[in-house]
Image (cartoon, rainbow, N blue to C red; front, side, top):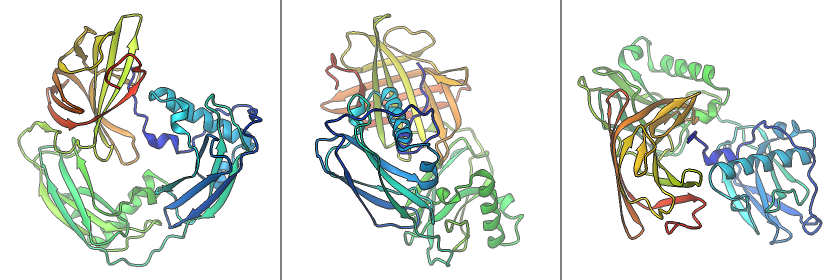
Amino acid sequence: MKRLFCLILAIVATCNIARSSQPSTDEGEATTTFTIDIYNITTTSATAKVTPSNNNTLYYYGFIIKEGYKSYGTPAEFAASQIEMIQNWANKNGYSLSDLLKKGVDSRESKNLKGDTEYFVYAFGITAEGKQSTEVALKAFTTLPYADEPSNNTFSIDVSKITDHGARVEIIPSNNDPYYFHVVEKAEYEKFENDEEFAHSVVAELRTLTDKIDYTRASGNKHYVFNALLKPNTDYYAFAFGMSGNGVPTTGVTKRPFKTLAEKSDELVRDYYVRGFSAIYEKDTQNSSTTWSVALFAETEINIVVLDINLPITSTDFVGRYELSSSRDLNTANVGSMVDGAIYGSYWSLSDKFYNMIDYKLLSSGSMDISKSGDTYTIKIDALDHNGKRFLVEYSGTIRFRGDMSDSAAK
């Protein structure tokens, strides 16, 4: 079963997808109008409040760069593209279209805007069947320009869970001014004459990777697990410096030295996979089986463990012990495989801050134990990847179920 990433971010981003012809509007709701209020506008964020004239009208709303909206030929073409995108996301993730629509007054803050940029907040009605039911309402606003003035932000850096190939880095700033953080080999850092030269070099490299340099910044307390990215027995610096949305360093560079272990160590996943499990329930009536795709997400949604387990079609839960197997036998978990660029079965993966997969490891053997007490599940995974690296994962908490579980006691 194909298991590619589809994060919730996808349904609020505007993508260039195939555009449909102009949809018809339903007469009963065509007269609904929307009042859009925008407040708390900053360089990279704003809050929108949408008030429909008819509280029974289902609708969708979001943020879009003004120029992006204008790239669509007509408002109807824009609405059709959004409906298609939302519907596709709902279908892939076990939701109905109505689950993603709003009724009545609603507000939302967008925190990933670009500074000094014109935006629209849009809203329009959509029926449960996926038809545009109102005109598209628009409200324009402009985010604040970036400020390049120096910041008095200071940083405390903690490095923990050091292995031969990774470490957990936590940044604790003194205020909420934006900053950039990463790790660098000590030998590479010492090639620069001073911190200022190093910071400008980092910014220059970021510009070669993205034209949205403001999206690479963080604010507040953050941590990141640099897993399977570092070299063994090597000196590193974890570093942080303030950075404006224009890519101008606004503070000095704070560094914390550490050294990776020389000896090979197990992949200890349990301590930083804390966000929770999501279980997708799908029936295969042709083969009389049920597949539970159990996904464990990291707190930052950067790291993911996925296991596909096969159960009889009559199963109503997935408590038990499952051995990873190369066959699709019942009561087993599938080993990981890569086919035509898509990951199937069971695997562990790592994505960058832009949610692009930068590393993955297919699981080849091992087991998963699942127990339950009330609404609390305990899941333990002890598995090996195809290179013999061990993965230890443990989770205890609730699980969000998705999919058609009308016959299941687990919904």
